Image 1 (cartoon, rainbow, N blue to C red):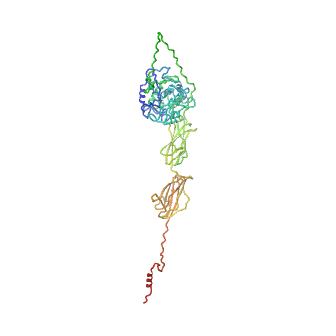
Image 2 (tube, one colour; image 1 turned 180 degrees about the vertical axis):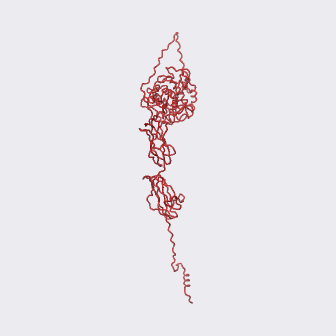
Image 3 (cartoon, rainbow, N blue to C red; image 1 turned 90 degrees about the horizontal axis):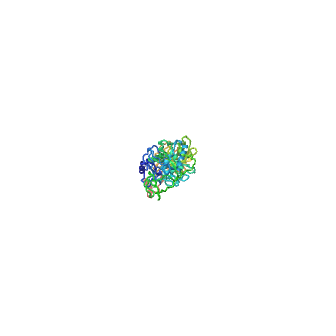
Length: 601
């Protein structure tokens, strides 16, 4: 489609009576039978080369940057920009210079209204007419009701990434009837997310309707004037058009119609705008032979003379006068709050620091200011968390949008730290604008406790080689409040002045039963830790169990190891000088005999 359109645009139409019967393809569209265009610039050239073309809505264009096509045929230009001035078409009848009355009135009303509020923009209504021609063929030739609303919605294709931009639904299908993806809407082809920022109620019916030509024309004018553009300057004019659809072909086509309408135009009745008989891309309507959109329709043959020698003279045809739109004073445009903002600034919130799993005491806040430094109310400000963190806003999200209040200040929802320590960034930006955002730095530290204390218990004493009969339990608090989730380090040292763990004092046991004299535990939901069984070791003495935590909390518990008592020896059961009860009779007799005096003595 892009290549085909490019060939058409290069051919142009600069000679003769330019009667280019064209209806624009809505900018957010492409014929379904054509090949998908390059997704980096869906509308045409890959290199625009016209300076900064960032749209005021941010992240895209008003139309979604899609190539030409909707239910209407592709557009042929009346002349190439800068080409010699052709002969203008006649000023009556269905010629290209004719603009339907309600559409014509909407463009002029938008120009008058915006020039009264933003004279520096110098918006010409012919620019709106050029874009309206390209986007919808002047609302399908002016098929609008008495209020200026199109008789049926004008929709671009589904922006689902298949040949077009991929834009997920932003309006719940309210404007485009699609709750999955967005579609460009109305005679000026706004995508719903852009309309949400720039939509207007120019006809005073209490609704901002993208299908109403008065509302849409005024919104388009404000959009084109954004970022302090002066449309009398060629560079700003190009930027404005490219912000609508970032395509070189689109720019050239709109400029062609803009210059054409500047050379002269007139009103025609609503519904009688020029529409081509067939699509110029080969997908004609019905079985009618194709008609070149650049060649006027042939003049009907003159009626044959009646027999008798006299010609029948057809009655004169009196053209119907143009339908005049209702005359109502132009309504002052409602400039979107976001369009008034020139800068976003931080509001002092103090240091954003908390511990893991805890809520931050304060939230980031930003102020939206206009060029005079005054606050702007009703501006949507988006806060987004970035960086390697698991901190979240209330509700569990990493982003939140807040509207500024009377003081122009937007404050982010409550922020809560996760379990990861470190720093992260919160960025605030104005929704629908490309202004520089402001950044806040937040820090998550370990949970802290400023006090550790042993839960009541007796002195800890055990003999060498034995186990202590009591378990140690410690409570952690921070500023007098129980401190759950705090890491507490327990270390056994030789004395209160010791700086390293003891080599042979009391110990815990690891999973394999080996001595362990340093361990780390986390306090439970009540701020408590209970240490495992403690053994005395083999060396008597006085030792210290030292406990510390982040935040300065610490305590020391004395461990006493006494020497085990020496075993008492077993006494000899035989009486002194007596006879052992176990001595045999013969032995006694023998002893008695030997002890008696010999008879010879």
